[in-house]
Image 1 (cartoon, rainbow, N blue to C red):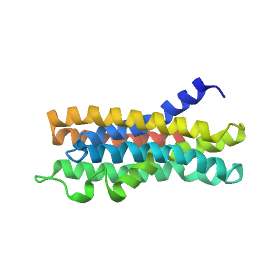
Image 2: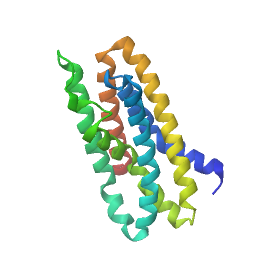
Image 3: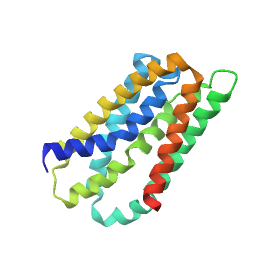
Image 4: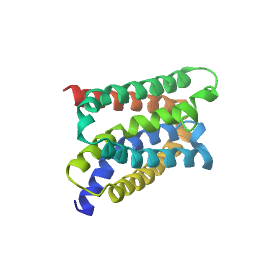
Length: 185
């Protein structure tokens, strides 16, 4: 597999993380350097580890993962998106637990945006592609595009405040619905 093909796969896989980063960056929580670091690092790390996990699982488990991966991604994105919408619609600032750059929310977002990479890892195993180089490329590209999404979200969020948090929640819900529709359609 050529570098161009691996980069194309990496950019395709990173689009969900980019969109989530854009929405997370629009919240008041992801404005500091630590929050930005946590988001881009975790998105890049999970995106790099999922293909390795898929590659290690091999083709014998592919059918059971493919049957539920879209439901898991949808559920995780719907939960986080709904929490963001609730925070945007409340009169007071959202609670600490809705910070997209911390705790369970960060883990759910990281898993939800990288589940497709698990299937890519299975595919790479079937194609006998070296997983380490491909996985590192996928992780780096995702990390960089996530950082770009956070920065863009920060700029939009500082201008439009809670409306951008609502848009971020809607983006997460839309991504979840798109993932579900792609797998069910």
